[in-house]
Image 1 (tube, rainbow, N blue to C red):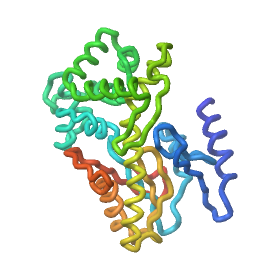
Image 2 (cartoon, rainbow, N blue to C red):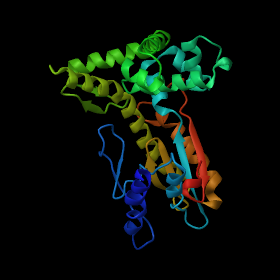
Image 3 (cartoon, rainbow, N blue to C red):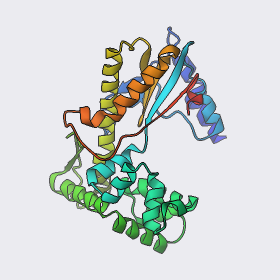
Image 4 (cartoon, rainbow, N blue to C red):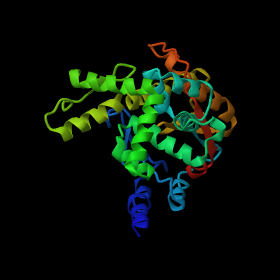
Length: 307
């Protein structure tokens, strides 16, 4: 009942009434709508369209491309983990990405001490939990809850991860110390986020501030990258004379969604993908890294069909 109620009250009853005279839905994208630097989407919020359940995916299928067009999604692959590897300079994590290996299987291989081809699905699942948990400041208690098993097992896994990926451990510790001293952190591109509670006498407030502070440069740099990607992709489409055939309709987390004319699909796909993957070198930083930015692509007649 709760699932159906949520879908009906948030999407089915509301969104059709917001369609404007041109038959389109015009969400508002707010540049500074989040503390992380990502866009926020309002009236309606199109960044939280359901995807996990079959019924939720049917909501997505209600968003259709104009006749003779496709909806095309370009999604940065594991961008926050790539950014974590870049900012920390961790040698093992960098090697996994540079060699084009699956990051979760690669991490599992190091943490469990087995060759990568011997990593089973359960090992990979555990590595995935800790990979994403670490960049969000997850401690041992939260890790145990997400992994299942005992606290001792979680502690051992946690310690083993940081022993193997010592560059990540040192980087996160440096960010924490910097935040306590300066009350802010900054992204690769120099955008600041302030943490007035980084030295609070109230342990709860201090811990929360430091947990967020360690994640802020990683998530914030990913947000900077996607905004630059929008700019460079637009610039390159314009230079190719394709702006009338390919236009951006949505930005969701690490993903850009374009509506592209069928005849321009191949050319636009190559231009947008190349612009997204080349952001760091084109930026004013001219940032060189061994870690490639990788972009996945999918297209379909409606948003639900885009894989």
